Length: 120
Image 1 (cartoon, helix red, strand yellow):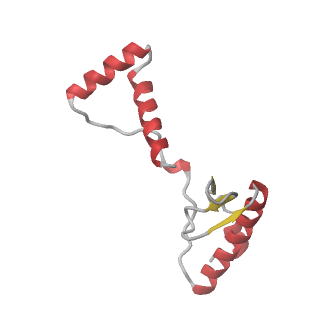
Image 2: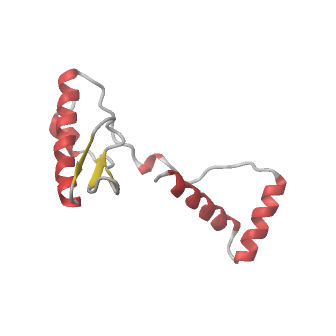
């Protein structure tokens, strides 16, 4: 069984979002559900994040809750196969040709632009 220090040393992903309505920054740890904090500056938000992470882990250990290991990019190859209609394939090929880039680069651009819309 891992100790608090063992868990604190794991590279849990931290997300920092500016709170434009209230001011300051909100910090969360996606792999530690409900673990979030805030601060008026990035520096104070980061300091508070370490405290929040420690408090969350201490409570989970005391309660005997499952604490999951952090997600790792090593779990993802960066590749997947996608079947699309021929008409969409043609359209993507034509657009990428007009832009002077490979269809792979064009599709990556489209996916990244669309993903950015949904991560805000």
